[in-house]
Image (cartoon, rainbow, N blue to C red):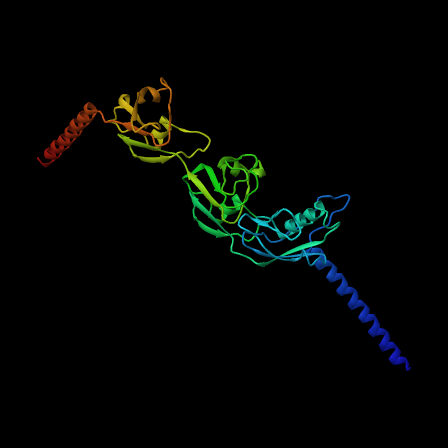
Length: 342
């Protein structure tokens, strides 16, 4: 064989070997990305690196080794579970990622002694639109789609943040299975698919305990409560309804008067009353207050309850004296003007 031909054949063989090695490396990397991480003696609990979140109604392609009796297409039922062939119990799927579900299926197959070392992969063939609703005291209430694991704070951020009148209570109405509430959260139903979870907004915003920032799932309805409101009427500079801005405490009488920019000069401070609607009946309660003594620190500054009405009446004597003073001032002004003319 000519020397040039041998050189060309050698180069061609080298290029082919390099290409095969590169393809094998890329294929190995792809398998490491798509499959869930494997367990090892040093790491018995696999770390979940990603995957798409599964929702109720999604159609999944489950592949288990070469087991045709188990592999196939399954749909997530209304309870958020997947019933896989040969497994006695359904496996929770809604809210989990595809990698997490693959690990759950692998564990179930081992526990029921169906396979000794199963290799499971899960893909979403048809994804049903997953929406979460947020209502109440947020800037942009509405329905928002979620395509990945989403927390309460993520959803509040999507809604433009809390409104100025947001209160200290947030409720999540679960329409499907959800995780058990953590610290700072309370539930009245546990595993009940229609249970509610209540969160403290102050604890949520402080971010001191990440467990309070629970996840939301498809179908959940998040309602942000409004802050309690008190009403200040009568002889004050700016009557109106005022929300309690400090979520850690209530609003006192002096704070309410300050938000109304103080009493007017004709206010009868000693005859101020708090009108409170009784929670047990339709009757209302009238609590007298000497606002003058409260302002001087001689009486306790009472705490107002939600929907209380603080009424500062007008003093007839002060109003009459003020009118006489205005008339006198006007008369003096007229006399002065008359004297200038002559």
